[in-house]
Image (tube, rainbow, N blue to C red):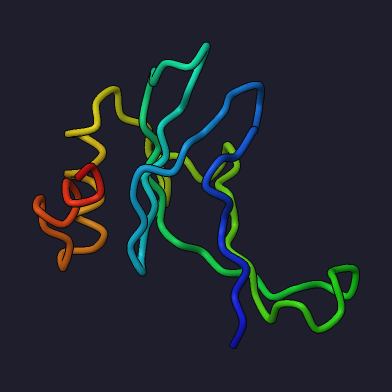
Length: 105
């Protein structure tokens, strides 16, 4: 099955979001304003099947960006990376703090 992943940088609702960390089950994006992190969004990986209007035979499924209704259900916002990491670990217990910080080396 071919899955279309989210982009490393997403522009949505007037903000730029930069991917900080991704596991098989969840994502952490930094919410940026004027090139500064102002919050971190953590959300579960949700897949949707492509519709008849999507590119033919390109992907079987795609990862969904959370909408407003997703927050508090399968997406959350945190003011610090530490809070975001804690939520990420609750979604994907196989993630360790060392795994998360390895991406910054």
